Image (cartoon, rainbow, N blue to C red; front, side):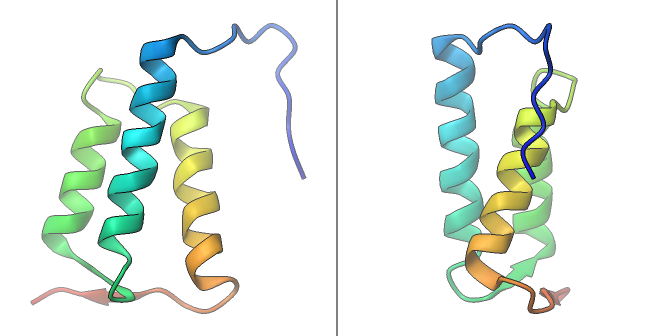
Length: 79
């Protein structure tokens, strides 16, 4: 399901580049099928660098996780 917000402004070039960087960072972290604590913190820091987490960032996170794992459970590596 795709949700569209009627009054949402189009993302700027900088925002699109940020979203691309976020997607790349998430994909890189998921290559081995696990997320380490450092990888999670790095992704969170990237999402929060402007002191807000946007719907677009959450959508990128969700879509990228589903692209890699489908409905399979995500395995965390806390060591």
